[in-house]
Amino acid sequence: MVVVVAGKDRGRKGKVTKLFPKEQALLVEGLNMRKKHMKPKRSGEKGQVVAREAPITLANVKLLCPKCGKSTRVGLKQMGTKKVRMCKKCDQEIA
Image 1 (tube, rainbow, N blue to C red):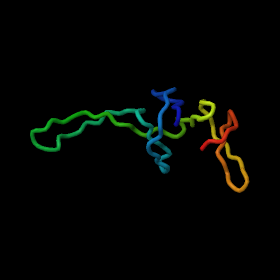
Image 2: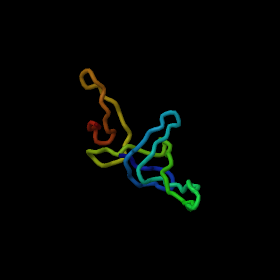
Image 3: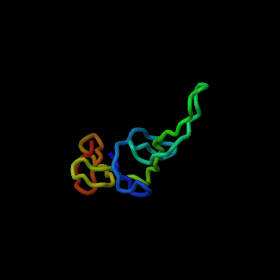
């Protein structure tokens, strides 16, 4: 879960559906909707306008901490032999 911190959807929360590491972007379910004009596939059909999600830059979203419910940055801590992601605000482990 992430919170949008910049842009027209600022303050809205959503679930990440797809990541684009090369472009440093991600798709968030139901946010950053764009309209796409679709041509008719067969003769006799009508064209239509479809609303689709567009990618959001990683810099414009923050992770939502499942424990404290706040938007936060992520820190790393060494727990034994493995590294664990931690919430910077409540210092709890993020799965």
